[in-house]
Image (tube, rainbow, N blue to C red; front, side, top):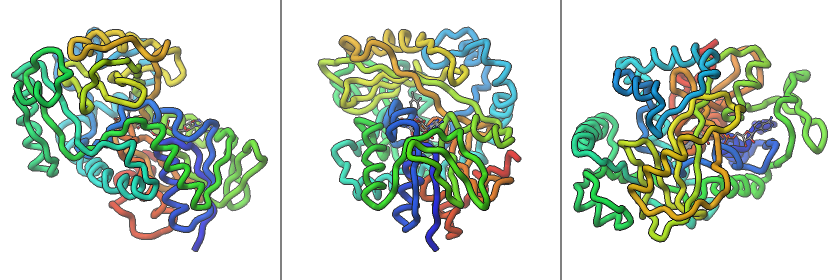
Amino acid sequence: MSRDVIVLGAGMVGTCTALALVLRGHRVTLMDRREPGRETSYGNAGIIQCDAVEPYPFPRDISTLLRVAGKRGADVNYHISALPALALPLMRYWRNSAPHRHARLAQAYAALSQRSVGEHEHLITLTGTEDLVRREGYRFVYRQRATLEKAAAQARETDQRFGVPHRVMDADELAQAEPALRGRLAGAIHWLEPWSVSDPGALVSRYAQLFLQRGGRLVRGDAFTLRARGQGWQVHTDEGELSAPHAVVALGPWSDRLVRSLDYRYPLFVKRGYHRHFQCAQAPRLALLDADRGLVVAPMRQGVRLTTGAEFAALDSPPTPVQVARAQRLANELLELGPPVETEPWVGARPCTGDMLPVMGAAPRHPGLWFNFGHGHQGFTMGPVAGRLLAELIEGTPPVVDAAPYAPARFD
Ligand SMILES: Cc1cc2nc3c(=O)[nH]c(=O)nc-3n(C[C@H](O)[C@H](O)[C@H](O)COP(=O)(O)OP(=O)(O)OC[C@H]3O[C@@H](n4cnc5c(N)ncnc54)[C@H](O)[C@@H]3O)c2cc1C
């Protein structure tokens, strides 16, 4: 039976949800205040990280905590003023990062990331987007032998548990594979199966174009006008009032604000991140994650995109791109970066949850309302599988993965 659905938010997650529904024959309107894929799904590192089978745990060793508290690295920054509001979700994040809990959560996380490449592949084939995609994996590079050895042992363990193919490269192999690297590093772990995208926002736009070609409707409007109306939901769009029996909240980092207005107090928070493009005479061949320093350099259409780690700050507080400055200095040790492409760094926010799992499924107290947000560090990766799962839940057909671990009701 065909359903009428409004999807709020046209990032990777919302666009893929709308697309999955329309491909199954439902009548779908996708609403955003901007063009599709112009926010978080635009600014990420563009890696379809099927290797990311475990969510990032909250660090629990003292030396890392002291380094983070002292804001000494490029990987983490925080605003003291944001900490009171973050205290409860971060306590939950800390608790869930205990090894036994984290191992259990990783099973549910892996179920999504391991299906990510296959689900993207389906959409990439339908959209003919091969020009944006590189299927050669990406590399974690290590400056120190000790950290490389430790990471290689961990990678072996992850491979045994989840089957994540990788290759450990020594200093010579890495230098040969990546001639753009300036100095001699200890080596790398090459994750072989992830894909990388040279313009993440453009991939979302192509998925949105397919959605339109298959009969979907795209409108501009403010999702915060969402109201229960009769047996369904209504929003105010630039083209007038729009109603449907089903509505999906896929507002990425803005989802918390909307679900709070409906009285859902979920442990949601954001980890902001920055990027800046640089001209570069010799770009790296593949995306490189500088594992000892916490930054990524990725060859993109606009230049080499340098992305930073996490900033714990309020979603709308003014940008404080101190990590970009640090990361630029550290990246320059790896590559010869030229001048920046933009005058100011881009800032975005990873939509995170206190148990590291996304929130996907029926809103517990509002019939016809569905949630699809909180994909944290890997929402670009998980968008298509998350969209498919949500479409199957709305239809009531057997879901691609067991949906129970992601059910919103776990927080209610
Ligand atoms: C620096 C950085 C690097 C990253 N690297 C990677 C990576 O390599 N791989 C990976 O998988 N993930 C990565 N991520 C994470 C990934 O980008 C996010 O998880 C993902 O983009 C979230 O997608 P989304 O659709 O949920 O949110 P978004 O892309 O933010 O989409 C939300 C949409 O909601 C819309 N919206 C908001 N408010 C309203 C409103 N009031 N009315 C109407 N519309 C509204 C916005 O305009 C936006 O289009 C990275 C993130 C950052 C910050």
